[in-house]
Image 1 (cartoon, each protein chain N blue to C red):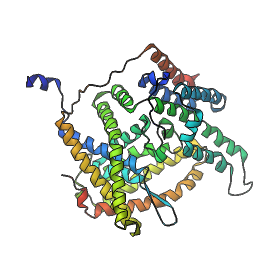
Image 2: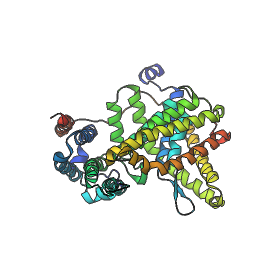
Image 3: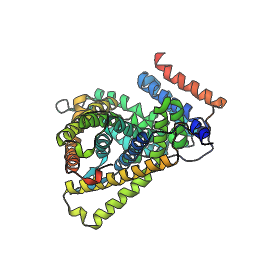
Length: 194
Length: 234
């Protein structure tokens, strides 16, 4: 009887299940953080959206980090209201800010590759702060390198004009990179995984 | 907020694979085709999709108002220059022609979102993308959709706990770092439990999916998708 079942059921191995579960939860967290912000003095909102992309690469490595962001993108295309302002659909991905959404897949993979220096992720504890910083800078550069020309194309603007429009957001992203490096380099035991 | 709403319209009854194909083909047709002469026809087709899904144009416009606001900045800021002559109307018109293409795509995607449950899209992804990668994508989409409300609730509790302890008086770096770390820790703990639960339930490469089948009308939808995808070649 047991032989019959083992022939018909092709189990997914434990390592793949663990990474898939991590990718699912980071995708869900990215979706939630995309709607989340705290108010700074003066009422300026501080958005948490990039943290999902950053930690997808840092915690899951290049392959599963990129996969996690692909899940986020597909869930939004499938109709879950996960893009900013609770929107969903292919129209958002093909709209003015769609380049940023698509870039997350490549940015998370690049962050994972630079920080872990291999396709298989190592423990967060063993990640050097320099590698994590370099990964986040490269990842952010990829986000802007894909997002800004896309924005310029959809808006019918020149590239310098679109870059000027997006420049203020880079300041906030630099602060978020510093916060992320602080979390990882601080040896936070909360982020350790067995 | 626009999400799936159960209904009996024609759009609700169509196979999700055909609807996905129409969405992407529509985008190819509108972005690769000549913008101005085709735009009224594509807009009419998009409005038709909305009506087939039982959705009003006003509802779609209201849903995407932030995107429409960003799009409207295109022609306004596009026409302005930082020196004489200050306003260049032809550059504003170029921008208007570009941003106008996005509106019908938004309408078609609103019709899809309104008429297609996520589990059907998941099945469509899993049956269309080949191999184990497609299976992981399908399962991942379904699980991510399931966990979004759970993670949202976790984050709400963390935010309330931080506020209850006077967290809003802490510096930004401390506040943001604390919230992010706690949210990540909770999510990774949930990931570990999900992993154990999936294995306990014999998570396999060969599960049983909901049945998808093409009715005659779905072939018509697929033909429309093929026509739209090839239209820029005409």
